[in-house]
Image (tube, rainbow, N blue to C red; front, top):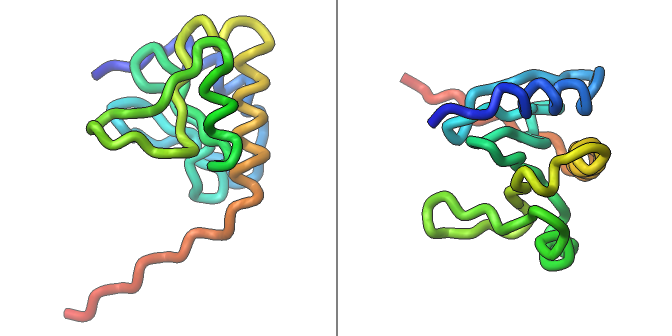
Length: 116
């Protein structure tokens, strides 16, 4: 599935210059990783965001938001934000919200190397 390149460019501008920021193909779209943790992404024409699990139910009620459910297993803390929720300043709000949340998460543990 192709992703909305215009939305990806707008996300790049909203993310700005974060230390240890990189882009990675993921979920059939593109993910923006901060310190090796996915902060936001673009999937089709939707923005993919992360929010604290305890804020999930409230966040899903915001304009354009819906539960992320790609494989019939919705995940708390992950939302799709449709085009109605990414207009104007709303996009930057979602991107910053996700980046701030991801910064609170513990560092990812590197997988152990397999012995051969």
